[in-house]
Image (cartoon, rainbow, N blue to C red; front, side):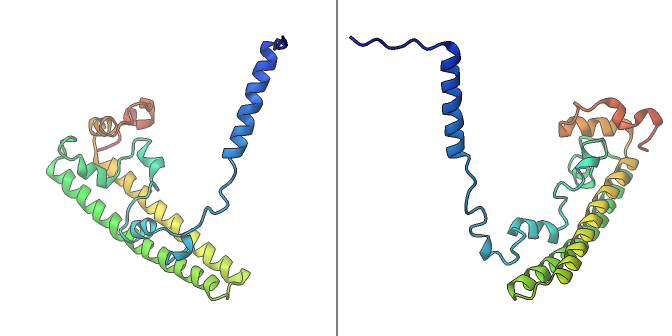
Length: 192
């Protein structure tokens, strides 16, 4: 009868680890076709959802620095108006802020989409040159920066319309309460 050699715990652990690494390597290989299907997009660099978001002035998480640090967004404040006990004046001002933000965001979004179309055409028509690609890329980047700044500005304006209790209630309703209270700035009497 043949005896099976005893393996030490270290040998067993090493064998398990090596097997796991080999399995991970086999399944973790990069997809060789990550952009398959993108060639059919009207604008190769943007999904249909992104184009729709730009054209409709949606936030696209551009104002997370504000939103998650105690600066509510106009759209969400309007959605939570009853829970936040907005006064009629606050509601009217929040609505005006939202409409102004949306107009500005739609305008910038349309301009971004137009520049993306131009950039896509340069490549589609085999006319891409370093200078023209750089100029359009910088223009698109600048417009995206302006769009983000616009969303952030309206969060700042929205916070100025709310009282401290409303800002706290907003954080609770949106599930942000894990933030330290000092980030809300209430100790300085802000928010009216």
